[in-house]
Structure formats: structure tokens, C-alpha cells
Image (cartoon, rainbow, N blue to C red):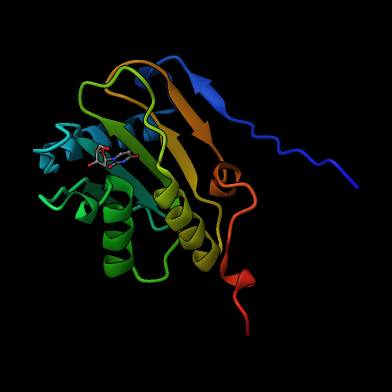
Length: 158
Ligand code: THU
């Protein structure tokens, strides 16, 4: 019998303006992306922006549907855009925010699963900046920390 624990380190910045300038610019791009959100049901407009390894910026926003489960989060919209425009290229840093929010937006469970697989298949840690329109920003250096004991491709049978 053994007890094991998980440890998650993350950095807290007081505001977007306190971030290093490249990260602050990415948070602003994420906030810009909230304008393209389609969220008539929740009225919660989420935006995400990523800096690819090459420096290119891609963005995404949440897109809802009258059949609620059909809606897709900003983070997964972004991952689809990134995979389509820059197939196989790692994401260096991904920022997520929501219009009007005063709390950091933390990706949902499904998005964590998608982020983890994206990181795994592109072979480079994906940094995440989680913020709101106002207030603090949390930074994690590796998407794996957000999904302990994850189910991955390694668990599938040969
Ligand atoms: N949402 C995102 O787009 N990303 C998150 O990290 C959290 C939630 C969306 C899904 C839905 O359109 C709305 O926010 C309310 O849950």
C-alpha cells in the first residue's frame, strides 16, 4: 500500500499588466477573441489565443448551440484552428479569458483532456495563462499538471 500525492505549481500575477509583455499581449488577444464568441445561452463569452512555436498567433472562442451539449469551448475551438492552420506545430503558450470576468478562467475537464493530447502529440509542454478581463492571472508551465491520472493514448490496447 502506498499513498501518493500530486503537486501543482503555478504562478500568480496580480493583473494582465503585471505579466511579461508577450504574455500580456496574448491575454489581450484572448480578450479580443471574446468578441467572436457565440454565447446566446450562457452569455459567458470566452476567448482563447495561442502563440505557436513559430510565433504565429491563433485564436478561438466558445460557440454554443440550441442543443446545449453541441456547444464547444474556446480552448477546443482554438486547438482545432491551430491543428488546421499549423498541423503538428506545438503551441508555446495558450491564454484564456472571459469578457467581464474578475476571476481566472480555468479550462473545463473536456478541454484539459484535449490540451493534454495536443501537448502529447506535438511533443512540447504547453504553457497556460488563465485570466479574466480583470483580476489575477494564473500561469502553469505544463498542461499535464491540470489533469492528474489522465487517460491517454498509452492506456489504449495495442
Ligand atoms: N467555456 C469555455 O469556452 N471555456 C472554459 O474554459 C469554460 C467554459 C464556455 C462553455 C459555454 O459556452 C460557456 O463557457 C458557459 O459554460
